[in-house]
Amino acid sequence: MERFLLTMLVLAFFALLVWLMWRGWRRKARHQSAQYPPFPEVPEQLDASAARDTATGVYVATTSAGRWQDRIVARGVGMSGPATLRRYSAGVVVDRDGAPDFFIPAESLVDARLSKGMAGKVMGVDGLLVITWRLGDQLVDTGFRAEDKAAYEHWLRALLAMAPSEQDGQGHAADSDPATGSEQRTIEGRGHER
Image (cartoon, rainbow, N blue to C red; front, side, top):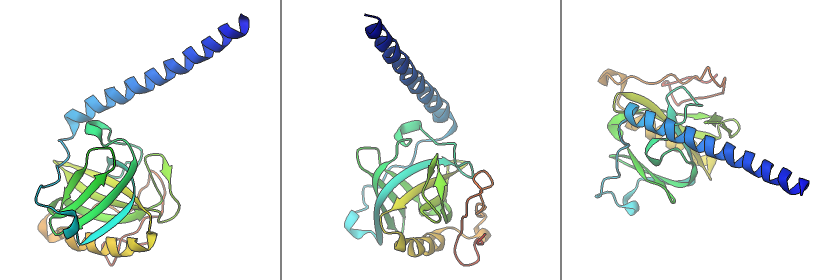
């Protein structure tokens, strides 16, 4: 009987922890729903077969730009999982398996770089493609880990070519991340290697 009560106490403790985490996640989502506008929906006219580039892998997270631990959980974008990245002249589609897809318009692109980690996940040097873009008046970072890491250089060049130039008044996000101390780099003069 004593063993049964101890087991029930441990189970109740774990259930309480799960409930508290769920409640914290919901509170954060409510707060961020007021802070961030809805993520852009994928335009209907974009056909997957017309994509200029496609990469399969894992959507890691979207965070506040430069704050690699500040995961955005509002509107269903907080969960990582299998995804396909598709690049069009109009922007980038993040096609997520079992979760809402979203669209990064070309005019919202600010920067692209490689990083080793985001939102508590460390992928190794240059293991993560990070796209910095404007969501309303906020800058956010979206992280993607491709199955084929050899494609990163091509993706970086393509994304940086799509991003509005500094002369357009958009500017570019810093390519260093003091919070992580991670090695991050961009391509050809729009960033530097540390």
